[in-house]
Amino acid sequence: LFPVSINLTRADLFSIDVKKTLKDLCEKYKVPRRLIMIEISDKTYNDVDKEILAMIKDISDAGFPLIIDGFGSGYSSMIMLQAVQPEVITFNMKVLNDEEGHITKAAVILHTVANCVQVMDIPLIVKMVETDEHEQYLKNFGCRYAQGYHYYKPMDVSSLEKIIKVRENVDYSGIKGWLEEANEEPEEPETSVIENSKGKNFFREIVDIRRQVRRKVGAE
Image 1: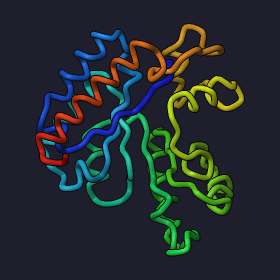
Image 2: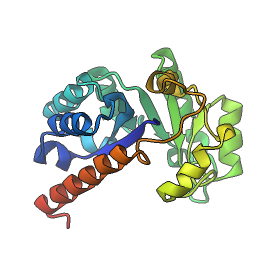
Image 3: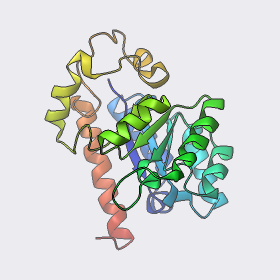
């Protein structure tokens, strides 16, 4: 099984009991909690709300790995880092680009973030990598993980499954070796959480819950 991430919004936190919902679904479908990663964007915690930080920490303490998305975009990122122990931090490449998509002198921000997370032994993923220039810059910088349209555009599950079934396309050690812990035989994984039949039902329920939340807050 491969881990997958779920975006968590302020509306989710204040509309439902997120921790209980995820725990119940994991138990119902026998999905290990460590494979359900919770992605927290700066929009979720940008006002450094103590109540939000407490709820996020509670979810993390329940065994769901956290991803801090868009780290370095403001003061709130540092507050979040003090409050919880994330498994992964992401950085948005667009922070460094000018209007034409070229890297600017603001690249020093990435250096600062990378140095910070390296000291804390937290993996960094750079997002929105869209050009050869971006990729070469990150390679020169020694960045190991990146994502963006330069590699793949959004795709359906069947297309993703075809890609990850080719061994050369996947880092089977995983970030911090999660895959080794999640699979008895990590050399030949057969399915991801999203392709596993129980995993599919898990995410169908997640989608239904998210729709209910959006209706509740008037987003639909």
